Length: 69
View 1 (cartoon, rainbow, N blue to C red):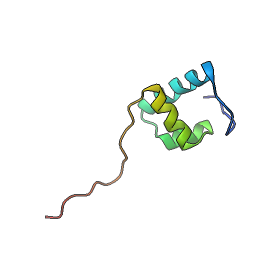
View 2: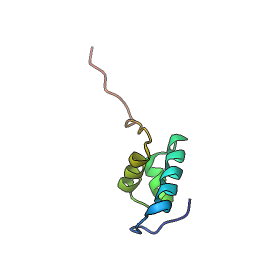
View 3: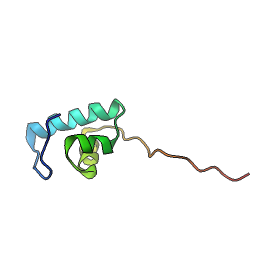
């Protein structure tokens, strides 16, 4: 993935290409935070691009709470 300067506007074909690349990597198991770091974009930008590209976003990780018995 080409390194993009933070805050640079991404439009048209470049935006579609970036969205497809992010979606492919996300569906291969990378996290949004990892994608944000590797692309030089913010978490919110990557999240928005994934949503726009139709990726099904995973739930949050971590421990789940159980009812006390």
